[in-house]
Image 1 (tube, rainbow, N blue to C red):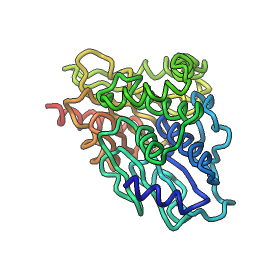
Image 2: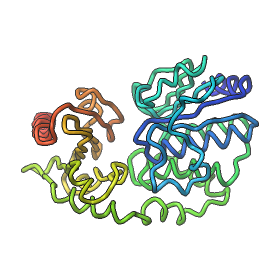
Image 3: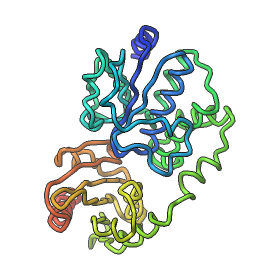
Length: 315
């Protein structure tokens, strides 16, 4: 697949690079890393994300160039969709903007695209972009390496998650060798939190629910909480990790109210339970240990429904 992707790069001049909405570190890091790498190869590139760059990732080179609207863009030779899992998560109908769509992903079931480069064993999509650049014989610079390292660090939870395989550590080391300061990246990601996020976290943690057998736990965020904290939805990134950190919890859930009739769900597992199966039941998807979905209904109605599903799943 990499050979086919290189042919598209060699044969094209104008590229669109995008990832899933509500982007995390891997989505943005991979997008900006590929954008900068393609430009170093002499290509014209537009980087797009429907929801823009979260505040904690604005330190990345090229973040100020990412666009949130493609309505005035002329056609592209090729579209790269990264880390999306499902094409609809790009929001914009990007497949209509070029004759070729290249899908690069590590999410199970991500099979769309003219060319589909899928590897569920990859720790992050950023690792797959790094493989592509090595195959292109592209010499990385500090900016490209910083973007890819941030994507890798984010998706492995600072190399704490079960996807932190030997390749992840090897690639991380090679990227650091390009002049990255790991402390600067970690500080930007984890220790530069806006006050609004911390206020929001205090409200969300007050909703903590732990099952009687301690096998699952959840927290929930309402629109009222966002307003009270003066926060944005992106400030709730990684809140699901708090209930997962409780001793004995096998599955953690974060409920995020999108509007009065819709709730997004994030699932995390310690490894024994495949939460992607549960997410699939709810029209979502993801990995065994990290998945998401969406349900119609009020927050008050959705939470007990999912708790009931978890009771069945875990018992």
